[in-house]
Image (cartoon, rainbow, N blue to C red; front, top):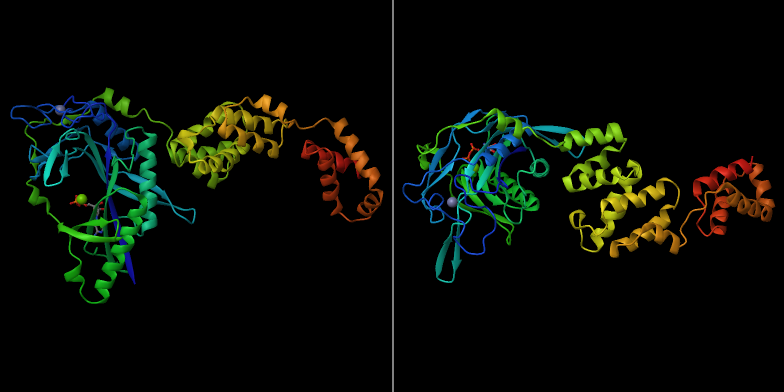
Length: 475
Ligand code: ADP
Ligand code: MG
Ligand code: ZN
């Protein structure tokens, strides 16, 4: 029996206005090489200056994961030659990162939480892009020098579910912190997956391979499954030493396999040394105060929803899984809608309908205020659930006034005792034989009376009222 060991390195592109060491914009540029200057082109004599906003955003993550934020950290040069990096080195933080240690708690399927230790989070500059067209290649340096935060976990995960849960938690956290848009398709949140296996009970770790640059949760799970099988088979066939080497591999999306890319470099291969152009990054009190301005994070939010709003744990976890959903929910509550009905109408009714028409919570055609207004009408008994569903079906396609819809569709619930009693009395009158049977113990007939009354009111009677009044009449 084998145990899987996984550690993840995540590259998050920070959403700063300017690059990490110069004042070039990080925004999209129509023309290649237009967002560049002597510094990010690495022209001789140009000097880098650290971007304070990037440092603050890195620090904010540090505080959020309960890490040590170093008040003085250093930049190092990682030497390698590749056309997308004109300086022939990358500026990164090897020896003393801005954030060291920390922890993230992941939610396991059995409802328990597990602590994943963090090694460090360091700032580094992204490279440019090589563009290959026909038989020639071009270099675009618009991205060169944009700030990345590399977040490195300890090898604490033991299967792909844990790895994916960790990534989802981290993804949602950086979005709550608003330090990155974390768009995976566009590469602002990409990850390197380190995987090894070892016989159960063995202390020493096995040889790890690193699968580079994966940008979807699905591929993370698939590439881990593939590697675990490959490594296990090699072990069982007695060729582990030969087949499983410390190397960098690529995930082949089409074939669903990992492929060897290159032998794993050792730190020495990169000739790391302190960048002589950059002094230590010193953190000021003002930066600390700014970095500690933090929104409520998912774990705290889930707890509060359960304790204060009396929402079920599973529902609270769905709501807090993304900030868009949580903030939508909180905006609904602002309108006075009850938490209990809001959860159901958001998670089930709205999301279900949006999904059908190819929308999501960020592009929702129904605003939080509108849905809150609708839920309030259910809360106070103006309409029943069935009526609200009809209204929501309309609101998905059209911006309409809810009161007008209630009026024109005749959905107003009858909650008035007198009106309902009038119907009840007619029903009981017409079914005296059943009333006798009920009174002599046939309890099941109660449902029959409720059904008849609802039917006679053409669905407009308030069901709670009907229940209550029927009980009183049938004593
Ligand atoms: P590098 O930066 O060269 O890839 P690091 O020492 O920073 O190397 O480790 C990178 C990642 O590999 C970390 O996330 C760590 O948790 C993980 N890791 C280290 N050893 C193992 C192992 N034996 N199996 C799986 N993951 C590992
Ligand atoms: Mg690595
Ligand atoms: Zn520049």
